[in-house]
Image (tube, rainbow, N blue to C red; front, side):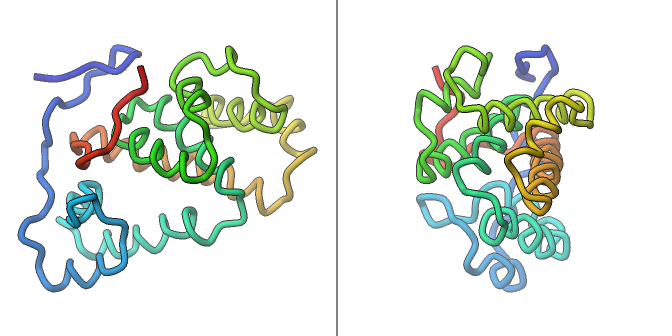
Amino acid sequence: MNSSHRDGAERPATARLRPVSPLTPEIDEILAGSIRSVNGDPLNLFGTMAHHPKMLKRFLAFGGFFLNRGVLPAREREIVILRVGWNTGSVYEFGQHTVIGRDCGVTDTEIRALAGEAGGHEWSDRDRGLIAMTDEICANDCVSEPTWQELRAGWSDAELCELVLLVGVYRMVAGFLNTMGVELDPNTPSWPD
């Protein structure tokens, strides 16, 4: 049985590819130091990617850059990722980044607003620009000129490069999560009410 996203697109209701278990020594070494679920297991995302250890290793380095080594402020990064999660219908991505976002200062009210018509919330101009950018890239693979000019006024060249790639990377992750039917990890929230 499939479930549907808000846009009517079907999503698998169960995992199409289960996380690797038990972990091989190679995979265990690759996942050393990675984020774990509350029960200590690798996140289901990483466990599923572990079917291709070389890809997993490189993904962790690349994806880890955006979470740990980028130039963007953490709160703003999480606003973008949450909005990508909503736009792509990735409940896993939205749930994981609800937890991370809260730790970075995104409020529950903001999280609820990002899961719907974000215009109903009183965002700062800076946040509104991020949301518009994310929505435009998710819809058209390009940021409009008015939104670009708004972003240009408040972000450095390096930050702009990272913002655009952040949307793209998390759209890619969402496509993997949705297609594989990766299930939520224990204690990870779903969509807000």
